[in-house]
Each structure stands twice: as C-alpha cells, then as structure tokens.
Length: 125
Image (cartoon, one colour):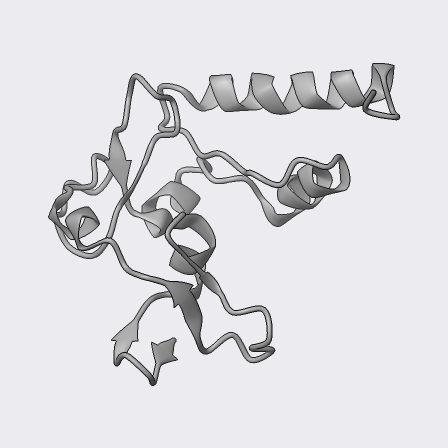
C-alpha cells in the first residue's frame, strides 16, 4: 500500500494492528492511511523471528511489551481471526488487543469474560 501524499507505505495488515495509523474512512480502495508511522517501532526486534526490520507492535499486557511483527503474530495465531474481531465488534467491543504467546490466554479469557458479561446483561446497563 502506498500513501501518495507522504510517499510512506505500510502493509494492509499492519495498518489494522498499529494504533497510531488507520485507514481513511472515505478511501474505499484502502490505499491511504491516517495518522503517522511511529519510527521508534522500527528499532524493535521481533521476539518471534529475531529480526530487527520493519515495524513491530507490542504485547498489550501492560507489564510485558514483547515486540513482534504483525505477520509473525498472525503466523503464530496470536492475532484474532477476522471472525473473532467481528464477534467482539458485534458485542460492542471496539478495541481489539493482541498478546505475545506467553500472555495469549489472558486475551482469550478477556474475550470469554466479555461474551459472558454480554450474555448475562445484554442491554449493557
């Protein structure tokens, strides 16, 4: 993907998982993103592939922050599937979290708790 205005580019999957960039809502072809790349992320070394190249995201557990590439996380099933994301959004959860392999269960428990809370209290009140 290329953003022709700034000559910066990002993978589509990366735009979906980096908090500081997003697809522009009026861009139906998904060729432009909003926000700004965080160049500090390029200095992080992915704990999965052990390569310091490209931009990494970090484990969303506040006490961890292990860095990893989005594509590496997808390969290790650390990032939610599209179906899981759709389910969370259907339940009114708009912030999807991603965790390293050590804390993945934390994320799964969080999704289960949200589902249980919505089942017990569907109105959200």
